Image (cartoon, rainbow, N blue to C red; front, top):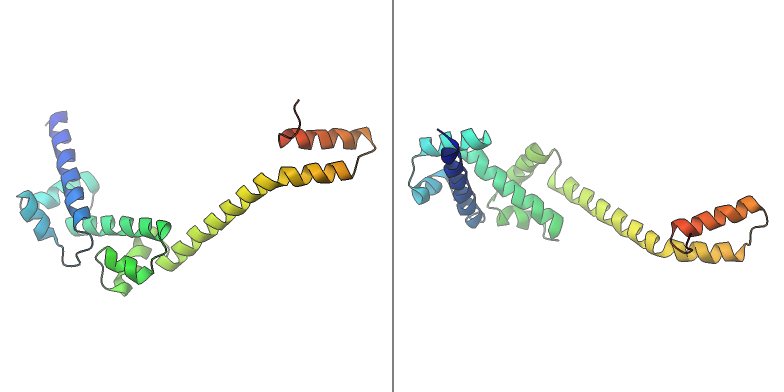
Length: 165
């Protein structure tokens, strides 16, 4: 069993991924459908996935559903119940339970964390865009008298790119 066998198996896992992703929104999508589509038995599928992912077929499908849900929580404003349905997990209680098991945060807390990061990033970008202008105005208004204060003002202007070296 050389590298050709490994490449073949990895290609097969990619086919499995693609088929699962095409059927994510189907809550009745099951391991049997994957086996039927790929023409392999449940035990062959199980052996292949355990070897490459250390997960059973059922847990592997769930993991892909949850990765998609995480992506939707990060990139959309859809309600959590809509996201749960979009990834084929109709029980919202199970969705929250599985999400917590996978990411150690509830979907609500995960979204809050993402929103907080986005707000922090937006504030940081705002201040880095406007702070140099504000500093330049302030530094010109209060002309420093000591050489140390003048050097400090020059350094601040230099750091923010308002004065060349």
